Image (cartoon, rainbow, N blue to C red; front, side):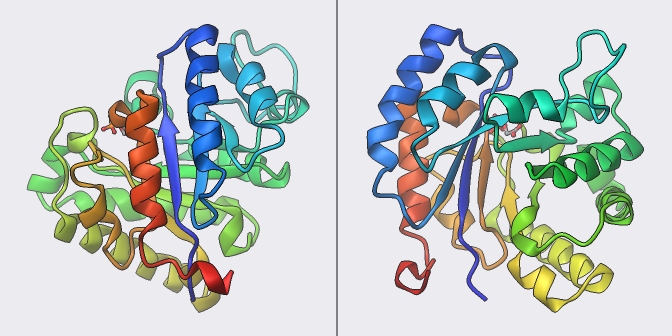
Amino acid sequence: MARKPMMAANWKMNKTVREAQDYTAAILPRVEDSDGVDVAVFVPFTCLGEVARMTEDSSVIAGAQNFYYEDSGSFTGEVSVPMLRDIGIGAVIVGHSERREIFGEDDEMVARKTARALEAGLLPVVCVGETKEERDSDGMWDKISGQIKRVMEEIDEPAGDEIVFAYEPIWAIGTGDTATPEDAQDATSQIRGLLRDLRDDEFADSVRILYGGSMKPENVEELIAQEDIDGGLVGGASLEAESFIKLIDATQEDNWPVEDQ
Ligand code: PGA
């Protein structure tokens, strides 16, 4: 089964509204012909309204980097799914390692947020990945499989195209230290195998698994050429529009059979 690749920019805590406007204006005309790849831009809360407005009539998905699973109430500083829907947001990152490690989000919270996003029709991009210590001490698969199992327990049975996973080894994020294509393929294929065991072939064959961690124009081709890597979630190399466009173009040229869509 062919999976349509996705290239996603994660701006993290970067860009003013003005900078967001310039960036979005730069990528919009360039992605018009990118039918073979889904393009998403995950931007800070302050830029969401503007990026959602600018991308409204395009194929670019405006996404949020965070939200809370309750719909409203006394949750100072939080933003809910209905609030995101209200301004036209189509996707959310869930369980990014920076949220897990710096802001203390645990597997339970990530699972509940994923379920809430799915219920509301937002596309969750669920991040999983190991630290260097976990990798070196053979704890990598315990960590990743535990993260995935908790999410799969909490959610109903979404179709494979309603949820995306991102394998992001923590030691590769923002470090310039990319996983080798073989290591990234190994992890993503194990993740797909686990999803096959937990659900079924149809789900496992259609769900997209992205790679994240120092993906850049110089290494994108060899990463997305791997059988189980369906695109990227990119921080640093997505901050400049030209660099992100290169990543989109490289993904577009991957083996996705555009004519079969
Ligand atoms: P990076 O970040 O591309 O800067 O390593 C990836 C991510 O955290 O999603």
